[in-house]
Length: 162
Image 1 (cartoon, rainbow, N blue to C red):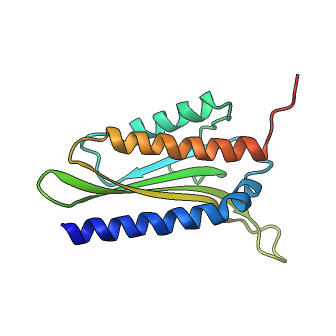
Image 2: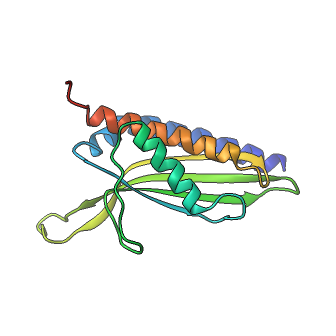
């Protein structure tokens, strides 16, 4: 158990350093986006569902003044915020939870302007240790990540003064 915690702490430290070095570039990649679609994929739906997480994220983005768009089911809708939550049981009462949030956009390869591909332009990852079936720390961490995205989005797309 101690070895898992040390490994998890080292991963967190490396992810934080990586995130800091990419901050300015990620802001620039969000420039010009008028709205975002939210897509969620959680591997454990026993306590909180994908729909609950999606609504939570959408509400937080709307409160920040970011337009959230809706798309038809089973449609790739870009630009999108994709959130993946992976809980990993670590013992009888605890779980290690990996959270990944991507800002995906449509891009065209050089020389092929009619071809559209998806690229990750904004990325943050986090991991937390929580009690099993206690998703409040997970949803709090997702809120923190959404706030970071909203700050970058609003820095890249300032609202015109009225």
